[in-house]
Length: 89
Image (cartoon, rainbow, N blue to C red):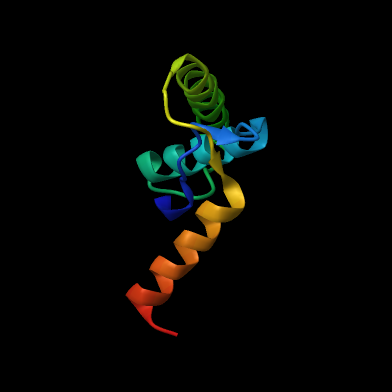
């Protein structure tokens, strides 16, 4: 379930709001143990996603590094190579 959470810090261009929210959603899904909350838990689930999104954004914006920003396309290609080695193709 949490395989979709990716590193969002130090990329050029920076992580988008949608990427941060998607990561927060995956995190809350993992914590709650469900991908779709019941009607009774919908409000609590959505509140948690919103709060985690806000905190994640604050974290990403406050981190500093001396490393140059990473390129999304290059990192995606590296991930594909790692997956091919791990799972074979």
